[in-house]
Structures are given as C-alpha cells and as structure tokens.
Image (cartoon, rainbow, N blue to C red; front, side, top):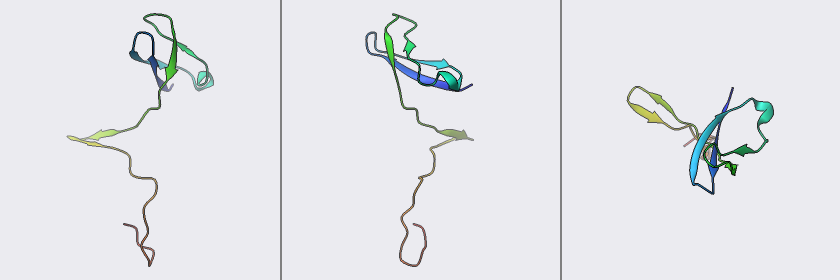
Length: 69
C-alpha cells in the first residue's frame, strides 16, 4: 500500500498516510486538528551503502553524433 504525504496549513504539520491507491484523490484530514490537509508531491531517493542517491535524470542532452552527455 502506498504512503502519501500531506501538509496541514492550519497547524503547519506534515504527516504521512498509508492508503490504498483507490483513495489517492480523496481528501485527508489532519490527525492533530481535523483540518483538511493538502497533498504534497513526494520525491524519491534511495540509500545504498553510505551514499544517498537521487533518481537519475529522465532526459539527457545528446551531442551531435548521438552520444549522451
């Protein structure tokens, strides 16, 4: 089940909710104050060994000749 991140503008708290994908677009309620929370856009990073790696760029510039930079 995916984890979605939310932000409550009233109490300025960030929190996570584990919800089924079928509830992706349904509003979330802040667990602290009960106010309607805003869904945040999440980033992804993975940790391998002692290094934090962010995702590789989706697109690479190509030079003349077809080589990626």
